[in-house]
Length: 374
Image (cartoon, rainbow, N blue to C red; front, side):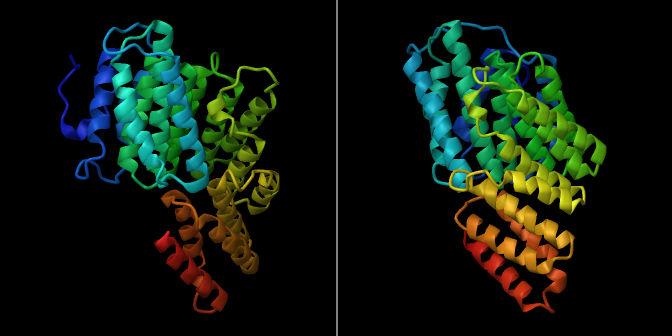
């Protein structure tokens, strides 16, 4: 039985103590989430309080076998991991609003839910929960990237609970870190810093260096948004150290292989832009240029938008327009409300020059026209 009865508005925000309840809540949520009248686009940082607290208190459940429907085998797990990997690639290249996103939600509803109620050993069950947690996290990130913030929160909560059911502290730390990134970008940097630091501290004795480095990078981003230069620099430095410590043959999760030094440098560009240090930001940007645009289209477009804003901070309108136009070229093919938000912020920052500079006026008009059609 569930711990208490919850209303429709709470569905998906539950973080049940019992793994069996976690399965029931997740399956019910996946069946319901796509109804048009179910979710708004709001964000409530308080909705993360109970899930985060419970995960930090107990990040891993004991392994349990399950006897139910059909037997779950290795082929089923391979299918789920493949679906998650494919969705991550499409998300990076085309944004969270790409048509492949629906395949992830369908996979959760039609494939993962029946498997969770099937028959499996302890070992298969752990990996089943881990794969399903990653699918839910991918779906959450896509929803967030598309501006569906309430849906994203609920999917993140389900991903965190499934990671705990898997006994996978490393996966849970990664989910919690991505939850902190949503919290940063919704305007709660201090709370986000606490979440990222909690993910790091809870997993520092069990997670791979790349996972811990990602948590520290999120912490640095949060402190950058909060204007805390010392804390941001310390967290970023620790992230660099952890990333540099990785050696061939180390235990290293495939699902975080995209997090390289170039990706760290791209985020550092934003951190120092937020701290009002445009020259330092551009130094980091030079290191981020190695990120391949064909694979990470959205990330490259966001970085160019941030770079354009650093030139604006220095009063170099011409260079800001030049880089901003490049960002617009890249992001015109990406379905991402989050990425487009960076360009809209850039256009808004240029507004004071709109009446006196026709190039600025043309850029603002083009940005609004093309982003509206994207």
